[in-house]
Image (cartoon, rainbow, N blue to C red; front, side, top):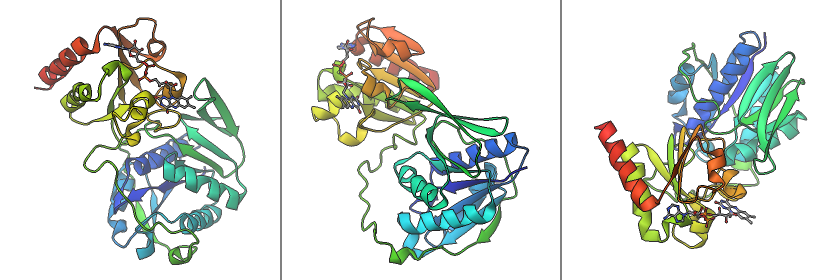
Length: 327
Ligand code: FAD
């Protein structure tokens, strides 16, 4: 029976969806390796401890809390030192991070400190015999690679949406610990965080994404995409690079190889051809719906549901149908 560690991301005093999913992924590994405990590490400014109960709800047996004014913002050096020290002390079978921008920065630092193997960007995790098998997209998503890690601790980062957070209430005993390195002493400091998408649902956190491509013809036609997103109530708007290059949408909306990588429950592709670089950012979405007037468009190869038709007819009809279904 082995215990599993999870690093929990937070921002502005709130646990992020990615943090809850990391705990759920750790819970899954612990349950499949004999029912060990899940130990979560939650770090932030004073007050962050109040979030510990949310981690217990999704399967954390123990929550190690680090509170420090210098951790109000992400501090790579201090957090990497603290996570590495905790993982070393805990003798864990595995350590789970999030495959977010922050997690992709943090997890290799921790792996290097521990000289431990790291399987990045997991879209599926399984325990097979002695190995933790991590599946992840490679070569811009053309193939799915499987990495079998027998060594302990096995570090892995999990793509957003790959392991949805599940209710699985545990005790969530809280233990306060000190940072292993003083946050104020790091060589790199985050001096300011500018929120590009103020008030908008973050692409990484959204359960539903409606993304638009060049098939929309002009920036003002993105209102069709926004209205469809609105009709779902909790959807974010994304775009292809063709669209962001044209300046129709901000770069922060771009999904793909050189944009955001997302795995929502539902991805609606509107007037998007399905270039390999776009697919690299969205093909692991749970359900993909594509609307395109060209029935040969490559997007239909990855779509679960395809609608061959004109976006200017289909999208308003779909918006009405979703609104009617929700009414
Ligand atoms: P198009 O390929 O022009 O497709 C438009 C689609 O709309 C067509 O399939 C057409 O049939 C359909 N259409 C047109 N009119 C209508 C209508 N009225 N009704 C219904 N359908 C209609 N792209 C990304 O998206 N993200 C990335 O991160 C990214 N990174 C890249 C990195 C590199 C190094 C390179 C070389 C390229 C990258 N690209 C990326 C660009 C990518 O190759 C494609 O050019 C881009 O994804 C195409 O965007 P699109 O589907 O909007 O446009």
